[in-house]
Length: 128
Image 1 (tube, one colour):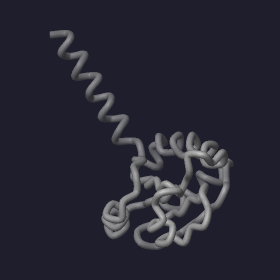
Image 2 (cartoon, rainbow, N blue to C red; image 1 turned 90 degrees about the vertical axis):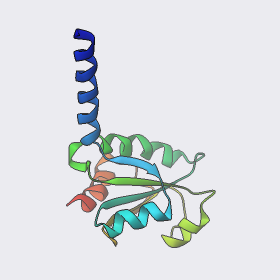
Image 3 (spheres, one colour; image 1 turned 180 degrees about the vertical axis):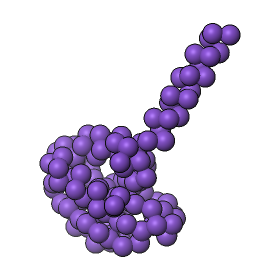
Image 4 (cartoon, rainbow, N blue to C red; image 1 turned 135 degrees about the vertical axis):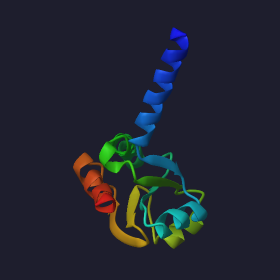
């Protein structure tokens, strides 16, 4: 019985931590439209695997998404090299671009910012 209680406690703790974390997932037009039309905060993260600036941004974004303040924010990742349609849709000309939306409105954009304070300021604009 104590093993069952321990498993339940672990499951509840995991569920609670997931509820306080923002989500990071691959971009699809359907996911973007669904989230933004529902008024949800979204950050589109355009990156490339070979990009050193993108590699510097990634742990900052991941860390911020673990913050309770950003639990409602969804980061949608776009591969710069393979998703040209998304680049056109969001008017993105280079990797390491973050585009923030509050509902259907773009509220902030940054290119090449690797500062935790700058990236957090962009994400904060979607959440408030």
